[in-house]
Image (tube, rainbow, N blue to C red; front, top):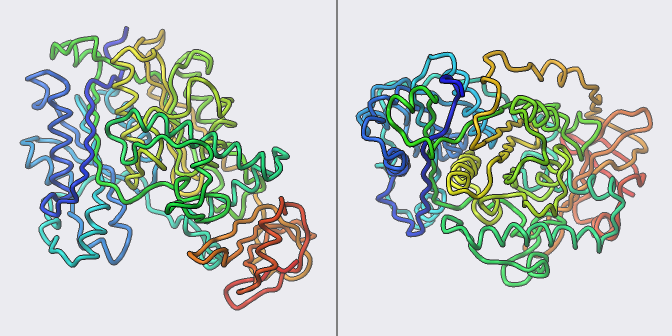
Length: 503
């Protein structure tokens, strides 16, 4: 056992169902942070927390909502908790909680931090209700005095061409991956839907046992697929329950330190959960440039590197939480790490974003908190958490364990990104014209039925095109829905902003 080994010693999660506008986002962070400190059961811990990191609120990225959110929340939180700490934050993305755990593990091992409080939350359910009813939430704008140190640089998640064709919205882009997956596996429509129903039903069984889950209903595979009772089709083949549920009020926190510091503080070793491995990497940034749409090279490389660092095999792991904003994300993750989607160990410890809840960028902090709690309770010895940002773009992996392992945490972790950046990518023809074949498609539904088709494909010379089906062309939409259209050809016509695909 190495004194510098990074460990997680405390965790907390809170879910509020009352939509109380008096509770501000900063109140939520304070409540869950105090709960995490209490969870450590160590009177001397708080004065040792010299680093506070906050997961960025997703609403700050929406121009109409940004002004309603607190500025410099880390600084304001430190003032409330009475902490003298450096504060950190980062760019948006569902990968950020695990990315920051890995980053602060490096700092702890290097001796730059003694104890780290990592927290985040969202109050979207209350925010949406307040905006709808006109309730005053001006008190949400509390600000701290000092800006946080920012990790990484913001980058646009997609190109203007992708945005114009509807690929800015994850509810449209992840079904593109789903269509590519279906084709790659050779599934007919019935088999495809059966697999989706089984996957989400299995996750719902976990959510039903989790008191923090926003939606705690067990759903049969048939109920997952049934479009009645409000479970309408959003983007084929995803019903509402297959989409991450954003309108939740949730917060989570974990506290990290080292073995040596925990021993000095007298923290019970039974509480120590070792971070045995961590890695991160990005796939080709723009979806339209990816030659393969149903695999993630970055997640496969990150998972392999994290397992090697931990000295563990996939077979040795007992628990998993694979990022689950949409079913395609889970299936791609399963393929990347070599896990069957129906593995008896399961793919989630929370119930997943579509059932447990998808609190903006912060879901994976709940997964990490839950993993720590499960291991502390003796429900397994080793676990993996994967986290994903944008559109299967940014990935981070952590390996958690009750055992310290045989090697120390290395300060120089492998550089995966250089190799990943060397992967071949497609040239995108923004004004494609002529005959092209479909690589992936999505059909967007309104309340009255299908109304938009999104097609990614290749022209005869190998260049990628992006197009939509003609407005009001019900026959084209039916052709995309009736069977697997991947590989079929059609005519691509350039437009002012939006290109057109016709069979």
